[in-house]
Image 1 (spheres, rainbow, N blue to C red):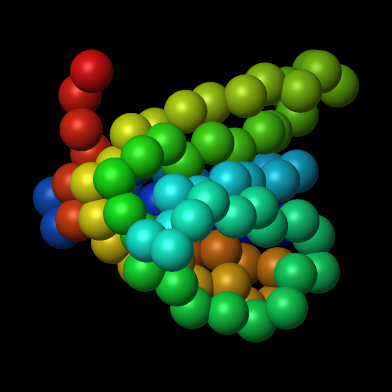
Image 2 (cartoon, rainbow, N blue to C red; image 1 turned 90 degrees about the vertical axis):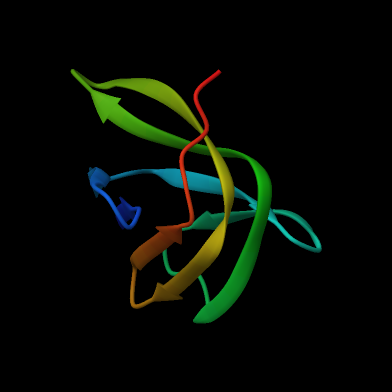
Amino acid sequence: MFLEIVTPDEKVFEGEVANASFPGSDGSFQVLENHAAMISTLGDGDITYVRMKEKKPVETHIHVSGGVVEVLNNKVTVLAEKIVSE
């Protein structure tokens, strides 16, 4: 599935991923290939996604502070309020 993460200032990531987890404002959730269409608000926490690099899974964590995620037809779009540096 295709994941795109953007803030008002920049595009943080775009590319194919195997799965992604999000800090929903009502609890965390995971999105896999062929997930049902949905829209959810995000709270503070880590977006975690796994992509394949040279046939090996690579997990990435991005800490966000609020936003919205939309899942539609194997495309996941994240509009994050801001990325929090740790």
